[in-house]
Amino acid sequence: MSIFCVFNNFKSIVALYIIIYTLFTCIESSKCDIDDNSLNENTIKKNGDSDCGCKISRQKSLQDSPLPSDSKEANNNKDNDYTCYSKNDVAASKAEKNKIDTARNKQEILSLSERTNEMVYIPGGRFKMGTDEPIFIADGEMPAREVTLDSFYLDKFEVSNAEFEIFVKDQNYKTEAENFGNSFVMDMYISEETKKKITQMVAAAPWWLPVDGADWHHPAGPDSNIYDRMDHPVVHVSWNDAVTYCAWAGKRLPTEAEFEYACKGGKSERLFPWGNNINPRREHWMNIWQGEFPNSNSGEDGYIGTCPVTAFPDQNTFGLKNIIGNVWEWTQDWWEIRHSPEPKKNPKGPSAGVDKVKKGGSFQCHKSYCYRYRCAARSQNTPDSSAANLGFRCASDKLPDSLKRKDEL
Picture 1: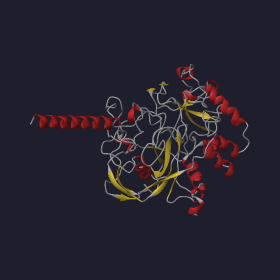
Picture 2: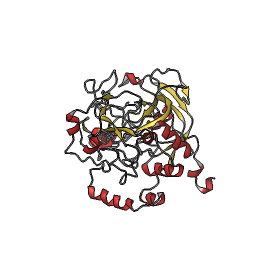
Picture 3: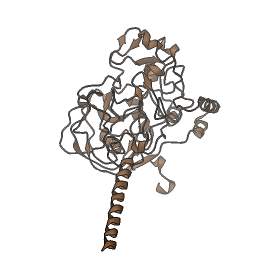
Picture 4: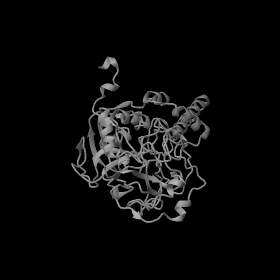
């Protein structure tokens, strides 16, 4: 009898151990849906628009006045070289610049930057688009509604500078930012010399400045370059630029529904691509702002600006990189904020509008100002707008022939 009791006690201990181990593993796992309780109504502007400046559009008015003196003098102790974002040794960046300076054509440049035009297959399915627990009601995040999508392909990576350069050289293309002669950049990334020449600012977000000479290969103005960031996402590209590139590549922009479905990994009720824990396995899986916005970025995730399109682990089972964070990404859809709760199949948004939808958030998103690095979050810009935190990736109904293996043609 005593042996039987000992055996039962042993089984109980083993069972308890298994339960505790399972719970611990779940907490550590990226698959466990742990709520992000770091936010509350006191730290975000739940019912209205945020003042982060992420909706700054070329067609929206600027405040024609000199920059405040504190803005001109801010961040004097920071490294304003936009070509070096990582917290790693600057010497490595300079060595890479010397190598790239010797490149004379796109083949030589790409030998230093591996191709990142790969697409992943996204199996069709049904999911809940939007949310019934919106953070920014004015953005039209609600309601959660049933959407069914056909299968499609989506770029694994954001379009990089290296990939965009191939297009530019092949088509002799000039972006809208180059044609307009300026684009928007956050003040802390601009050199003091460039900042002295700026006379306008955005009234609602004075850290956003229209910089003459800012474009995709001069991301912080004429005295900046992309020598050591060919593998970073291309920025300062308008919706029109993105559409033209995707067509050239035999692709298209993803719809908002496709982007959100891919972001959620085909699931519903997910804050982030991997679940609801902002730091899965106590690691950083996306490039966003840490510190006090907009004054200082501590770079706890390893970056104070954009990061390589290959950075961080795959964010979900679809194998996508940086589908949230790093840079905002254009989608096909025109912007609307009133959505029918009725089920839809392959929705493409309204037939006309003023702004286009962008998704994913960026390295300039902070939870206190722009908690839009959630899959259900959204923002908008006019199609001709561009900024230092705005890029894109492409989609396709079928895999382009250029990406197929020879035995698939």
